Length: 372
Image (cartoon, rainbow, N blue to C red; front, side, top):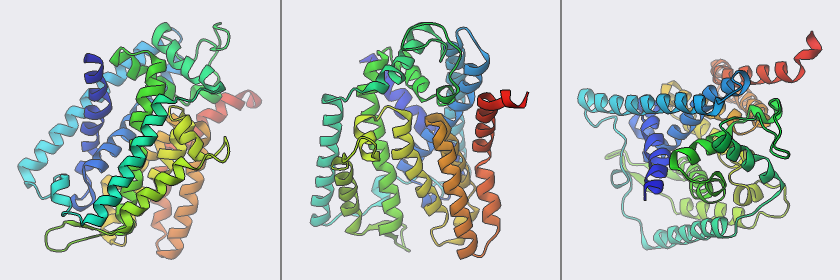
């Protein structure tokens, strides 16, 4: 029971409380519990990346414990700050900017949509069951999962070669993508073996989070908001959209390289999280900023969230940092032309500053010897 409570605390309570920080700066009509939870995860992963990477590069002994302590303290402080900001908002502004619960957001659904939503949740349940009961093991497990286990048991990050068990220097290609170390952190805090966390816990967390991103995207594309009470009227296309996405994931295993294959069979790997969660979240936040209302473009919380999503890409994969920068650049160029606003290029570039720093560190560590 304590193991489960620890998982709920670090995978649900703490991310949600941390997400209250960017939610404080987001207008009330653009935030809901799902937005807060997703914002909390991306901010939490960004914090872990900023703390863990210096420990990997410049701390040789017991670097995992030192990074874990720093991250734990920062996470708890951020969670407390999120609760304090929410309390302050309630005290000074009432409930006008509060996070609306599901009961306040949605009106009763017609029977047809209830059936469609039931079908989606059945498809989601099947995916979760298959991901846990028929866990897929591949060659990458010998590296990524073992790195998490080494951090849990030997208290070092990327200082022991998983294939031989011998000491080694950090491999820059993998050492800057510290997602396995976050899994190790969850394993230590819940006192569960890192392999179990990777193959059982992570699918139960990351798959629903990915569908939560798709749901938020669907809300923007297929829902309209009532002018009187602010309630959301669902189009029948939203549950259909979710079912279509679920079918894509189930039947997308046409190759071992497809995103759908990684989504269900390598859920715990950073590159799977980058393709299934981080990049879709980038589309979600950009859609939310440019949803037709000019006020959204000045929403500070959404720009903070966009920066956190960009930063979290480095936690997952080094190549993901480059991909999201390219995506941001193309998006900024298209928006600058269609919206006739050159400021969007500056704002998008500012959101990519953590990625630029990441790539500069990567290039220097990987190829810096050429400059000597």
